[in-house]
Length: 261
Image (cartoon, rainbow, N blue to C red):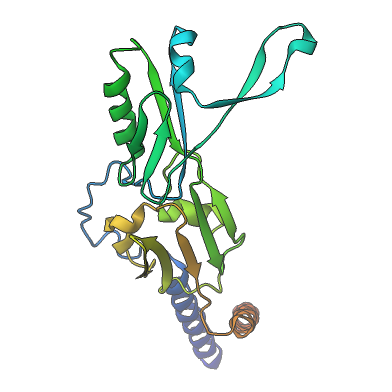
């Protein structure tokens, strides 16, 4: 009877210790209990002063599109006998007033537009001149920063002008076990003001938030469980030792019960 009681007590301790640990590391624990209302189907990343834009115009007649592409003849291929040049695309700097200087068309106010908005505008302006053209627009300096308790903190360049909060964490190798998933910070500069948001990633709120899609130069900070990282890590190590010890005792208890029957 004493062995049975010991076995039951150890099993209960291990079970509840494991449950408490899981509650701190599992994402979106209420996902099956809530109804998401977000209808976001595309990003709303806006062009800002200080951005660098890549704008390329493609068409069948290279002489018609040539004036609209801002390039630098960086490498000459004449030594190879081709008689031509290999051109490097130059970015368009968005000035402090939100304008760019586009070949032929002149000054265009682009701040506040999405890349799709600018693409449509250029199509309207150039459609009569160049038939059957294709225009590519991208934000060249789209970067996000992930700091704190993640596997690979750093700055990440985003090539397709679209990155979600969760994709950014994935780029950083996901959060460590020492991360506080209940107080993850998003820091953003918007309209000249610094803003910050706090998300509990054990819940599903972020999936319904307009902050799900990141803006250029956003910073995600993942804090440790405690104020001092080393203390948090030592707690995790102690917990692992405790859990391992309880498992060993539980195994021995099971063996003792089996031998005494």
